[in-house]
Image 1 (cartoon, rainbow, N blue to C red):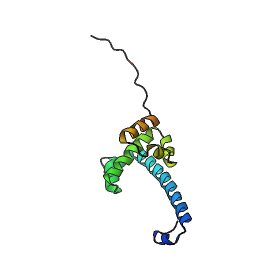
Image 2: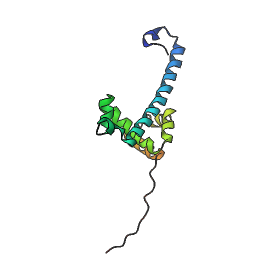
Image 3: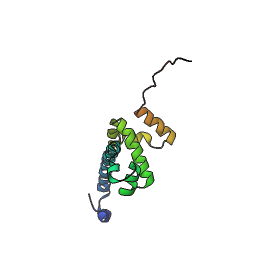
Image 4: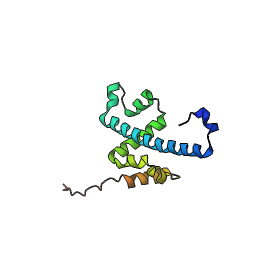
Amino acid sequence: MKKPCSLQRIDKHQLLRDFSQLVDKDRRDTATMLAYIAEIDRRKLYLEHAFPSMFAFCTTRFRMSEAIAAKRIRVGRAAGRLPRVFGMIACGEVLRRAKHRSMREIEQLVAEVSPKPDVPSSIRALR
């Protein structure tokens, strides 16, 4: 990839090709980062570094904004329960489906991609 200061000299077609490659790489890197977040959180490795939570680990140690840390941890945890979501993120599938949707619609999409099992019915004796 070219250095940012030299972008003005790049042909428009090359600029768009490079940008497309960067977007693809960003999706793959994001999926990988979310997988790492999920595994670090699952193992509670942040405790070994004297952080009380994954959120504190991300915001203090890695200087993520609170909003970004919260979103990435939430997505990492959800995808950790259904690992195929990492692949969907890497190829942009989840992002395409979530584009221009409200939070409620995105929550429905997450439920669709990662459904929870039905609660088994039970019978209890009344006393």
